[in-house]
Length: 437
Image (cartoon, rainbow, N blue to C red; front, side, top):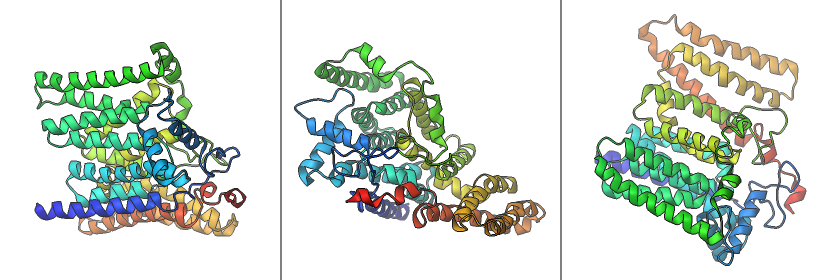
């Protein structure tokens, strides 16, 4: 047990170092947003910042003389401290988000290991989050959701362990900090409240002792902020469009397509394969371990419920989702090595064939004979699981090997088409040079 704990700590340290490097290396140069549509870069701040990043910088620079009325101030205070210490630059503006995203990768490892008792599965989950291109890009940008995601995961981590009073108290503080980072952090408060109420090992009296002070402090902070900025309740409902259920129902498209932070989908609608792979592993994990998956499924459900009860969600609002769907990914991948042939065939048709086809069309420059040869080769791979049904149980290792090759090749192709060759995201990796001077 001690060896496992020691190895887990080594893994945690390695993952945090990798995450911090990927989030901070050339942070002032990537991602770079030119000013024109659909990139929506903004010139008033340091060059290359996205429009919302520049707006958060403007709000941070007003502190403490002028208090922004639209968003809570915690993340803005972190930006203010960063530019005071390092000077105003794209690097210093984005640094608080980059650190929060790095800590989120660490928390994914800790939560996954806590739920599934496996260092390897936890490492796969956190490393997938690190390299998943949407989380890689948004984790390097000055978005308040990065801090919300970090505090939400900290709340989940503290409540998923042994329910000591100290951990419950700290998780309540973490939930409040999530709200103070951005209003969407209310999802952490919702999760904390529901988890305390449904916990069978805590008496009703003790539940009230946890919840009453927690909610009192939270409401006190919220009303103090509203008093300082001279807000009123009716304006809150109007500004956040509370109660207009499904107002932005079209935002469901962001769960499946590739897009810029502006929400613009370059060219035709193209599938976000990183998301689809994480959804498949999430479903597989919840089918295999419904009890262990309760904290993650609950927090994800509350997130979508909150978004649909307010003003919907856009592309970078899914930063919170990135961390939640990747927590069980490592466990799901390791279990999928044992999946039946028909599930393997489903993975081939839903992911493998579309990914290879898109890569092939880019590599072959649309030359028909090249594309067709690659597509024909896909048919052999696609029907392989069918032939595996004819194999006796004593050759079960062949099926396992096939699944391992299939899953490994999917991950390799995702990395290749996202980083090595700008096939999936040319609009990020080939920004106009003229705007960089």
